[in-house]
Image (cartoon, rainbow, N blue to C red; front, side):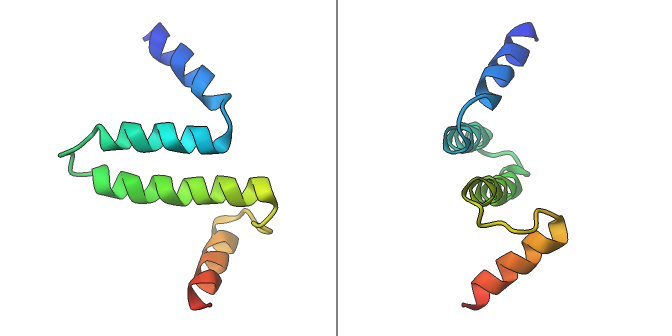
Length: 76
């Protein structure tokens, strides 16, 4: 378990795009898991939020603000 904690700590220190790629690969490794598709969706949203916050695109980081921005971007 100490190895997993160390790996997680190192992964969390990576840039957002690198963390998203690792998360994606880990989720894909769950192939066949009932929750894998849902986890992929959640990870895609999380990665987009991280990218938006890093670039200053996300003005309101509350869940409601983020949902509002996502809905607005889909309407365009």
